[in-house]
Image (cartoon, rainbow, N blue to C red; front, side):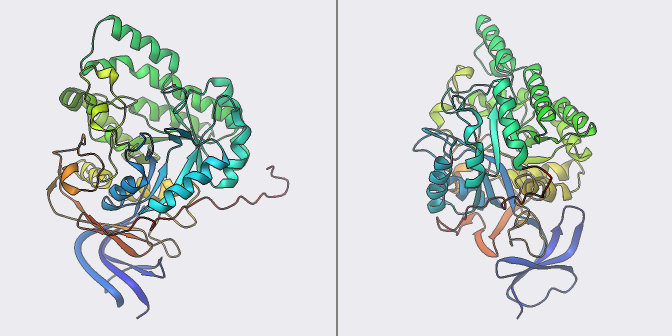
Length: 459
């Protein structure tokens, strides 16, 4: 038998869907994708109508934002259960901002012992040091850089002001990597927060009022204009507004590398229902918007204006999400275990082709982080990272699965028509039926290949 693994079902590719297709793997790599009678293999599964998707690459995960809380032991467990085979972890680790080669290496060593899926890393800068260490972090293997136009915390999540952002973009441009930026204008947000406080509003409405659309859109212009001025690929790491995707499209039309990521919460949850119901447990930056905006974002998916879909996953302990004073809560929600089935559900309900699932959660993230030499597609030669979803109704409950460090989720109670049945990493089954089989240390650090400079083309 020539193959180690063969899966037959509905194979979802970025450009087409193969009904009664199959995927064959050998030595941890995809070896063949085809139609019709599947070949023999040491392990062979005829899965009927099940969806066979490329393993998702979650472009935005915060495993270490809260000390002694989640860590990679839990984030990658949630990922494996949810059909996510690679996570890209953010650099804002409590107590250790990832802003030097030494910090990158510490994190690789730390995560490598815990990870159950593969992982790539973002780097950032210490505002006091500026761009001086960008080159050494590229050498250490970061897949992209992350900055913020808003200061969440002066040490853990600092604001990068315009002149420094310009200097950082200019330093990144020759490396070929992308600069991702959190898009909220610091001055504007602080002004609106003061207005909300002066009005005495503390309930669920306070967060959206403190960050109206203009705060997000002003920052997006700053980010994309900085990219245009420096020649650096500019990426907005989350956008809750249809207008933001229009702005990015205009920059692309003018010849600039300008992309936007949509988080699964902006495609699923809304302000008038979910924030009202959940309060702090639905507090996210930028905020969840009205339902009309959610539907607008799905149209942006269908139009091809969304580049990536991610989770912005962070598992804050419950005590940091349940303050009756809305603005006093931490921002962010967990989502790794449920992103893929939520996207599939939303797309099917709106008649949006599932090819977008393969593109926005696998192919494009692999390209974005320069990992497409090994990741992101059911294509011969790439890692055999595969998610299998079966048509089985379930109601999501984060605490019931046992795969999450926290028992709460803003997605609890959502009915899912498709459920992750199995996840494969490099051809090995790492999760089945919600049970994670992968041991800590199964996952590997993945990085962009060293960049070969073409003579005369600059650094």
